[in-house]
Image (tube, rainbow, N blue to C red):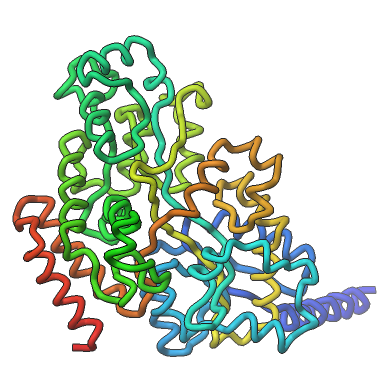
Length: 445
């Protein structure tokens, strides 16, 4: 009997070893804001495909990007699937599989319900394409929205006080010029009766954050009728920083005005040069500011804040003052060096299908990439941001997606930061110096 038991254990052990050898392990590198949704999706995927194990690893943006670039350069294949940010497209493209070609070469893997027309064409381009190559599938259609304290803007006493001070009605600002007056009103230093310490939470640190925040103020000039006439249509690869001729557009009176507007708002914000994503999120969540431009991912934090209850009466969402937000999309890409391309393709396709696009938004607040999701009655009822989100993605500005972006960003945030601190003059001549540096980088000097 003992021999039979030993033999049975040995047989079972061999079977388990055989299964482990047969099971494919997919390594998925994810930005933190996508990780929870991807881990949830991975559980359902593994139930459907038990021979594939998916390991989702959250990696901070500051680490994820250089690590991805290093793997792309070496061809190591340390990851099978990764989330890549919209502005990194040109830099990482050479290391990712052309998914459209892969789909054609592996028709047995193609989802018959995939529906390419379900993606907005602009979103598909910026979070999926590079030089005609389909390097990713849009997963997190992130954009910036304007959050405000609904209860304060509807308070009759505050409305009366505002009208007395500014000779106009208190309203959610539609332009940045209007935002200056409203932010001043809600700042205790300038209005002791203000219910909040500051009017607006701004993030202008010397990081990539400043690079995208500038576009909130420059895009209203760049994308105006006069701006289009002067600079030409926006190229989706070069973005709003450039003219249609792929020359810098910010070294102009419009570029100076954008920085002037940023400076005009700074007195009404808590530590604008030292605050980033986390700090501005907390300022609004704690009720210390009346307004904040922020990404879609903050919604879950705001909903659980005790200072913002009852939530539906205290928090409102509007289009960005000036009418233009900035895109921050994330896509799912397949590593060219992956040894498990077929399985990785299956996972990407599954993660970005219609069902999971809806689930990840309702359950985790990860902004949807599919049109069917934002048109879904259940989704619209569950989240009041949807209608604003739909309007925003049609007019949002874009950062450069070209391979030189990291270098352009690095020198730009240094110059912009010193202008905002008053260490450099805010003039066309000063911005021309920066534009000349851009030209050198683009020329490979």
